[in-house]
Image (cartoon, rainbow, N blue to C red; front, top):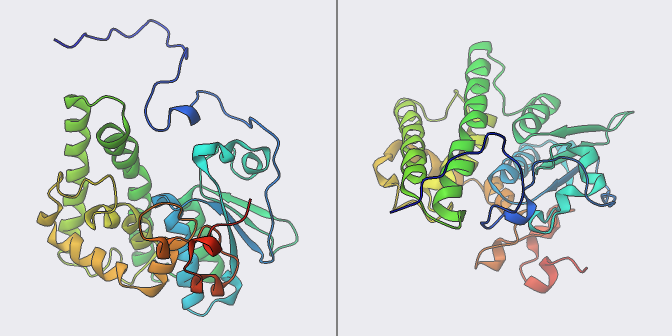
Length: 289
C-alpha cells in the first residue's frame, strides 16, 4: 500500500525533489552566477533552446523572413537550461523569470527586452505588421487563442509532461488528471478546427503558438505520448498540424537552438545567418566552446 503523504503546516525546501530537472528547480529567483550574454550582428538577439516555447519564436522569426521582412534577421544563442545558463546574470537581466526564450531588440534608441513566448510573438507581430489579422474580430479571436495556449500549456508541459515523462516515480492520480485535461484541450482544438482551416482566419501567431505544443504532440514529438493519448482520434488537429509542419519556415524554426534528437541534420545549435541552415554536419553545427 502506498504511504499517504500529509502536507506539513508550512512547506520548506529542504532537498531536490528528484526528476530530470531537479537540479535547476528552486523556490527563489535571481542570478546564481555572473555571465554576460553574447551579442551578434543583428538588432534582434534571441536567447533560447528548442523546447516548444523556444520553437514558437524561431518559427515566427523564420516566417517573418520568408514573408519578406529583412528586419527580422536575428542571432539565436543557445541557452543550456540543464547547465543553468538561464540563471546567469545577463540572462536574468533580460528575463527575471529565468525561462527561455528571451529576446533583446536593439533596433531602437533604447534596447528593449521581451520575455514570455506569447509576449514575444505579439511584439514581433505588431513590430512587423504580420501574422496577426488586421480585421478586429479576427485579431481578437487570434489573441484569445494565443492566451488560451499560454494558459493551457502548463497542464500539458508542467502537468502531463512532468508526471508522465519526467517524474522520478509514476503515480496514477496525477497522470490520469493531466491526461484527462490534455485530451480535453485537444478536443477543444479539434472541434474548432472542424470548421476552420486555421485558428483565427489566416495563419497567425495563434497557430504558431499552439502548433509548437499541441501540433508537435499529435505529430509524436512530445513525451513519446502520441499513442498513449490516442491522438489519431483528433483528425482535425492532425490535418492542421501536418499542414503547418510542411511549411519550410516551420522546419527551419524547429532546427534553431536544437541540441537533441537522432537526426543531426535537424540540429542548428546557434543561428546567425540564413546560410547556417546549409550546414548539416555535427562538427560544424556544434559551436566550439
